[in-house]
Image (cartoon, rainbow, N blue to C red; front, side, top):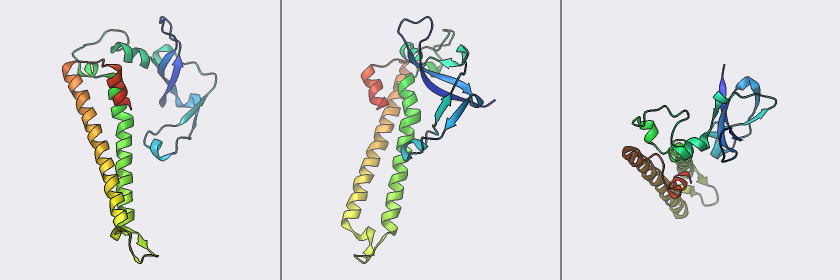
Length: 182
């Protein structure tokens, strides 16, 4: 029984905050996968659209991501707060482990492809290799600097999450969460 998780906005019973973001799990056979995320920046997420009609999802297959994010506690309340996973800020760590890691890998690959392309390209009009051009070398240097900045920022934010985790801070100020999410 293969399953898949999808995002939805759901009005959860017993809450007064109104509809909130949730992750729901359905059996793959209950829906139709639409392969529509085939762009360079999203290929690494292995994400796709989903078409679902008349599917009942029981409550035990719904994860209230918004509530868990805001409370910094798992559902049900029976957990060991000393367990490391419960001391990590949920949303910043999730963003770091998924989207930003994919973005860093994509940028690194693009940088490598650019470098190889410039090294092997022969300019017909100028009669020389592209790499011999000062403009090409400057462009590669500029892109290299951008890549190094992205890698350094990613490492800085990972270090910040590790620090919060060591200190047992599962909820962080919204500005910090937004910074890491961006």
